[in-house]
Image (cartoon, rainbow, N blue to C red; front, top):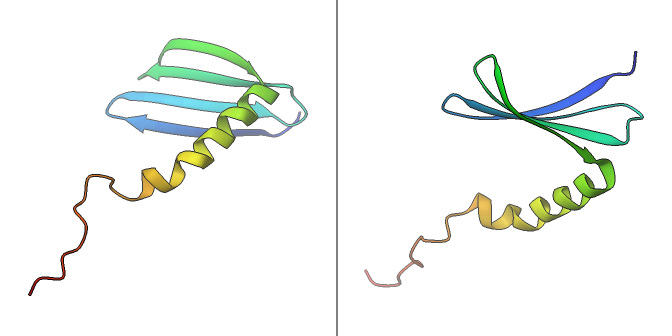
Length: 75
């Protein structure tokens, strides 16, 4: 059986999991609450790669607060 790779994002009691089997051409996105699946979607791997690139472009804005005031030179 091919290895399965997954990323799980959690907030409060909602989990979002992205998983793919080695050699598969679809990524499975599952949104769940506890042990109940709320949403399950298969995404073509090429479309998911575009999504990953978009997240990569957003990474700098996600790792530093954009609302922080600029440093002041005042004593």
